[in-house]
Length: 168
Image 1 (cartoon, rainbow, N blue to C red):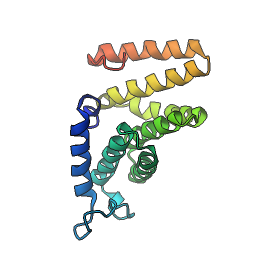
Image 2: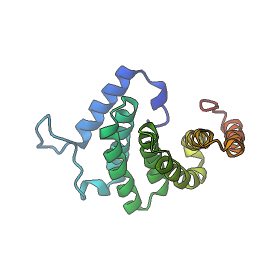
Image 3: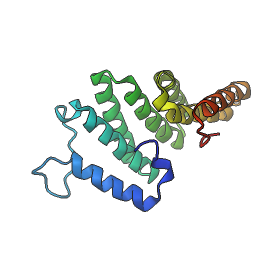
Image 4: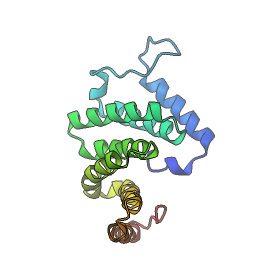
């Protein structure tokens, strides 16, 4: 779901958000209750990924005030479960929010932390290229053009290996 999120229409993103929120809500919760973010609920990998999808939905709707705490909670839960790649995808969401708010240093730190775990597994190649694209963009903003070019070249290698050119 996360890999195809950039390709679906806004209305489909909203529908996906509503379905995710329905799954995250406790069974006896009123319809307008916030998603369950209790520590016990966040121990499930499925719950963590649903939180991440919800954060993605908020991010793509530019609801940064909701996306950041959701991504942070999901990242913490993934870390508690020992899932470094899930946490890394969350860091990408967090970094996008920070970068959009002008916090380039925080964004770059999060992206650099996320890059390693994403590079370790082929199913995360799309997220890795997204991360590298964002790091390169930060480097450009910081006028570190050589480092940006090196990352763009690295993205081309991953794109050729996976036949996925969305980020290139």
